[in-house]
Image 1 (tube, helix red, strand yellow):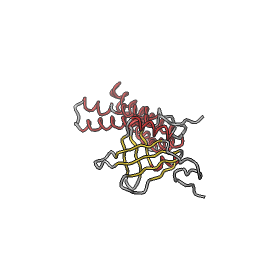
Image 2 (cartoon, one colour):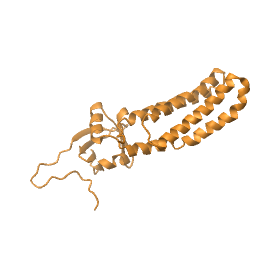
Image 3 (spheres, one colour):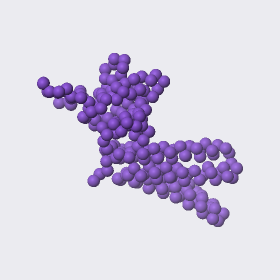
Image 4 (cartoon, one colour):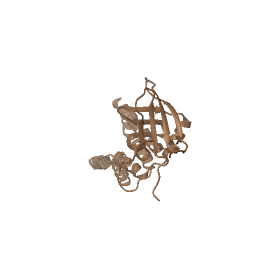
Length: 226
């Protein structure tokens, strides 16, 4: 029998079931459309103010049909088009309390998706380190070049292995540090007077590193396995 996603219906003669919380939200878009979010035990409803049928999402289906970035105070619903809300601190806490801890299975799925290409990148860096062995004739500088490529390659492979086993959200901090370390390449090139295009690679690495830090903050409520 299919499980109903309707709000809880009280028994005859009982008091109406009230939502745990009711929030008036405004879309973070130019349209500024207003919605009402009602949170029930095991269910939420999202009502637009233009008379459209309400959206109903069961608690255990939330992360398939919506996303909540607590650290950025952003709530996103994946409807016919994505609907974005920027929450105030009080509403953020209300939604976080209703959701509870993030299931470890979902966290592990997200981690594996992010790091699935890391094995290929790591092997490529190790191979580049092998190609740089010719730089050893330049003494200490050549040795540092080889260590740079091989070290970053092994680091990336290590992240892939960790993601495949039992990851911890700290993996995102190590991911961020990897991209910060990779900044050594454009910095060295800029110091040697090479093309200004290296600035683009430097900025790109820093943006990706910041994104990894945001992922670390996003999964602060992960329920770790006992």
